[in-house]
Image (cartoon, rainbow, N blue to C red; front, side, top):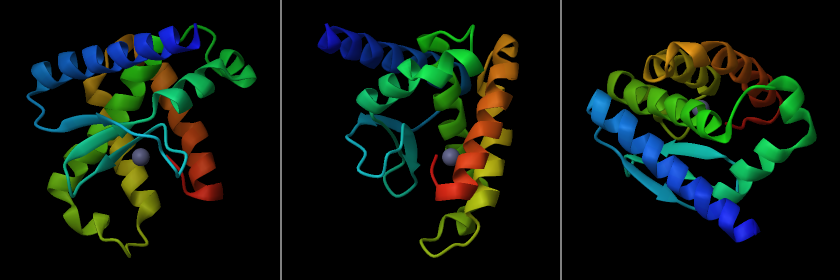
Length: 147
Ligand SMILES: [Zn+2]
């Protein structure tokens, strides 16, 4: 059963990514990985790839607090929000590569840029949830530098 959920999630991620890529002419790869750093998704500018960890995404989606914060958010739309944020990084890297230096202390700026640039990849009805996830993830980021 668990395996089936993960397979379903994998195909959702690929499908949403394909839809957005086509509509916005995105030129970037998508790959699954087990994130040792605990990222749901991440954008790697060196390989121009968005990495996703389906186990971790599904764990977050099923977490107790999730339904409280996002009562109406489907798994498909959660994935769309995560992908949009990573595409924000993809786009930001083209404009501001200096922010992505390994020793850059501009992590928070990078996150803000990605959230700002990423929202255009979403449909309007997801904007509220997008901005809520933004607030939550920025709080986490300030605490332990994730997302
Ligand atoms: Zn980010």
